[in-house]
Length: 478
Image 1 (tube, rainbow, N blue to C red):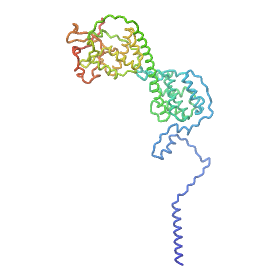
Image 2 (cartoon, helix red, strand yellow):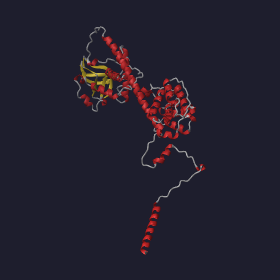
Image 3 (cartoon, rainbow, N blue to C red):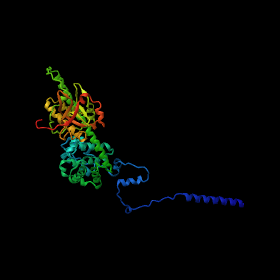
Image 4 (tube, helix red, strand yellow):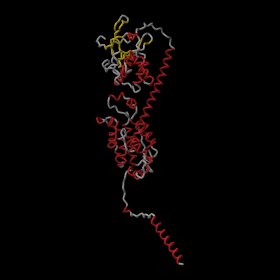
């Protein structure tokens, strides 16, 4: 009997020990304290600070877009006021009616600001979307092309690109406000002495703050968001709106350049086709006998005794490539053509001399391929004197570009001219003459080869007969 009692005791003891062990391992239940209304506190933090709450819990880095965040803090206006606008520029009016008028994603104050902004651009934005700060801007491809795009069109191009980049309708109002504001500093009325290329973003922000009174009715956070995007759109903004504005601005510029070049191509194709019709009609006319012309000697070419300086009119050379030009004229060096004529020759002292007519023809050929209207004018001009003047103006502009790239020796060719008059002396007399004057455009031989000997080794005998070339002074009689 006593053994039975001992066994029962040990079983009870083990049961108690097991229960105590399980209770010790159990996680205590947390009780959430109850707070009254007076204990609650409202704290304002930025979205960037809010994102840290979940970013710190993980080693992963998250990239948050404004599309994802905007529904957290902005609610659409259910019944926006409909404001009808009659604008001078149809494209601007169409954009307003499509994206702004009655758009339920606008808050009331932002709608009033954008309406005032649209009116402001309609009145003052009919100006180029690029600004000429210095005379050098005329030679820049970007300025030459984009000066054809108005500020209104560029602003709308940027706005449309931003709308493509966003998926949330609630993000569109801020995108439109930033797009239409970003280049206001290019309006001529507000430039004055303050303006420089880098200043237009800051000037745009100043115009928003001081000229558009409804901007001040926006809450401070929204004002700062738009101003930061505008001021930093040529720099490195940290906010998503500013980064997207840069993407849209670049995409719009690329699209504008492409459209302009396509338009020029179609116009040139149309002009060339029209000229072909004229030439066909001309060929069908009865041929007239031409007087026989005496074959010229190679040394009698280009008898212009003095270069006529032609002040170059503005010529769009955005199509011109100096590398392509050099590759086209290089094969002509020391090459004799039919009739013992040649267009270029080298000398052991490191200079290469080109016929100006050959250079002009090469530039015109390149221009025609690019659809350049000025090159077409040179090609198809029927009056010889006018054609010569147009050709000199084109060559002058081309040589200026080559001079800037250190290809033209300034000691042989003055800054105003596309060439010079030279005295060419011969080893053996040619047509009874030991020397002759001719007009050439000189180049440095280093443009074509590192070794002068490479040009000199294969000279034909007719070019080897040239003993020396030196610059001739201009006389009043010449």
